[in-house]
Length: 135
Image 1: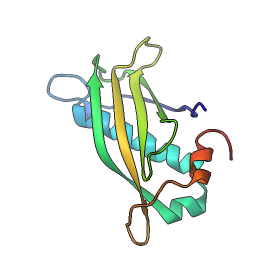
Image 2: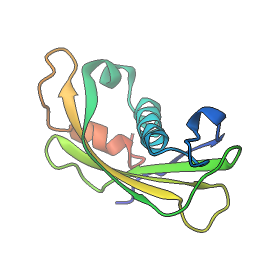
Image 3: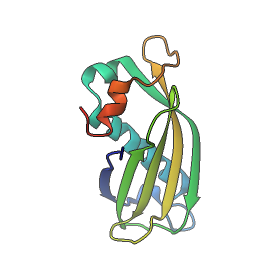
Image 4: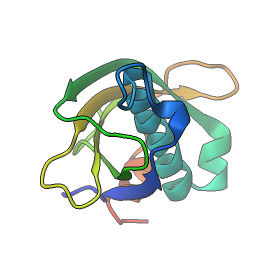
């Protein structure tokens, strides 16, 4: 099974530039979180969004190139083949539009919680199916 790739594009704003003149480390993490949330909201039903929330348990970032002010950026995300109980690995590539390789790759582990109780929940099969075009 191959997961859907979800994509967003934007231009790097001045607020994301650090003292070295390129996109800051924290901005890369924000890009990864923002696209993860957008992907979830695009694929989940309103009931799923109401019933569940996701929290990050781990981020791993590999920086490969710099992004600069006004660069056109493409951010791509997809989930791993299957969750492991309540956790699910998510991959995010962040790069200059048209570049062969991403400027950064973020791999995150997300954990599903029940919204009302904040208790850990196993990721239901019907949610998994929504990220593989089986909805």
